[in-house]
Length: 582
Image 1 (cartoon, helix red, strand yellow):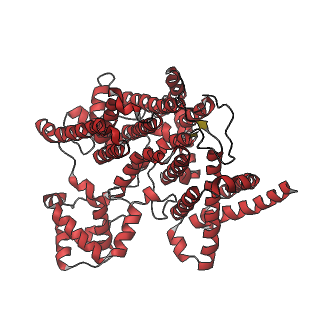
Image 2: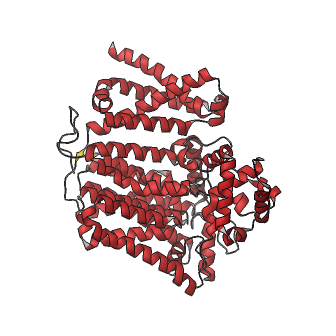
Image 3: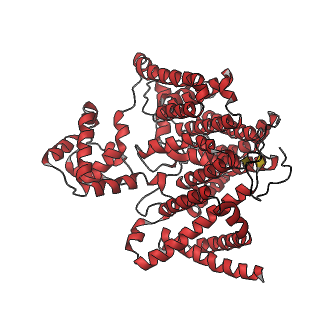
């Protein structure tokens, strides 16, 4: 009788949850019947499982105040991230209360169930001997799958940014607008094979090695063999990894460094800081910081602040950790200063860092906000007032790359530009806040804005004068892979192709890991948190690549949360899988 009752409740709850969650995200007529059916089936199965374990969930999750508060806050943030705001503002208040309440309860139940599964079981945190050959074995499925993408999109996918790197390699006229570190990688690799394909092969090998090394590292400290293989296979077939491995973007290498640094921090925690007392550990840490600092123009603060965070937590090793901070900062200043000058390398345009202020100014001008005559004249000297109407709430290119935009006026006196912007912000708080939330929606919003867009990836080689073009090994293979990507994008955009969902999962897994391994388990979140933070102050467009590191690293936070300290977690009647194989 209990099973029948649970099933009836699950059907009702599943239907209510599906209707409510989709109602907060989009108009009913914009939702396909397939999506309704698929989500309803999943919801019913989920609620049946939830009800079957409700007592254990209450005991292991809801009675732990720390976890309960964390889940409650994260559930509210997720609800906000899912809401279609124009729809929210125009819906009757009573309907809003109903659908938002049911949606919030559904999200909380989902997070509680995930926490329950991770808290009740796991692998004991202990040193285990694992052959280094396992790294190679984990790499093989990733290489095999991602090579299919290369064959489909041979010799690799190239956007205008990619072509800029390639053009610099051909002309030897270098510009750090797009980080020269990636240009140098292309220059070196093309000495072996003068084709974009050699860069793709490098990216496939680099990504697969870092992912496999991460799985191997966690296995060294207790992660089970079966779960490790499941992670390797899942990450091999995930479309995000497959398509990004074939795109010539510095973001791919940069994001892989973010993953590697995150794993280094996790391993430091599992080794209780012993690797920081070895030259090999410090050398690895230094190389990772250098990679992050040089492969994206916002990388230096991420590298330095991460290192400072490590110094705070591992105060006994502050002298060893000070060396990477000083070395990375010094090398960065030397390379971007005297070395760039000596070799006539043009530095990145400082106007690039002003994406958010420029967007906010454009929003105020285009929407007839409050401006003084002096402010209007100053803005007119940068871009004719009527041309500020080119403003797009989600893309800075319409303004900063406008034919009439005089960025030299901005760069000549950036202090004045910032001062005028600050005054405009004070005069138009509502407009600038709205402009900011729209421009940064890629970071915090799972549900794509109705008037917005997401640029998830690029396929093919953009038109160019260098003779580069897409030549798939098989047109059938090209069609199949492209169809798979577009189908994934169309049906699972919120799940896979909006990075905010991975950010939320990273926080959830870190919350659980901190309960099982101690508060120090929050430390690995620092690189992805800082990367998102820098994007919140300078995001130029809604391109997935700016946050792809969050998607790439998310599974390792899950695996990290599968470990527990002996005699500390699981506890209070929670169970562990017997004799977890390492």
